[in-house]
Amino acid sequence: MNEFQIGTEAVAGGHLGWIRKVHRATNEVLRDHRGEPIVFSTEDAAKAAAGVAMVAYLNTPMLRDGARVEAISKAEALFKPRHPFADAGAVNGKIA
Image (tube, rainbow, N blue to C red):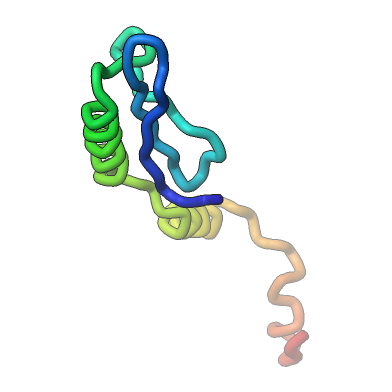
């Protein structure tokens, strides 16, 4: 299901915390700065860390697709050559 989730998984030595983002279909295990999975001593600690990671992700600046499309449209209007026959009908008083 495409929804935000947090959770834990029991492993040898403790628990892993994970988050699931809407645009991904798999859980992302919390990792340290070296890329190694972080093993928490308790399930509560793993779940708390997953919650913190999810809030941090949700508070990051996100790019709106609409803003990007609008910027591309403005750029194309300035630089894209017009079709030579685009206004031909209007010159003769006819509308195509």
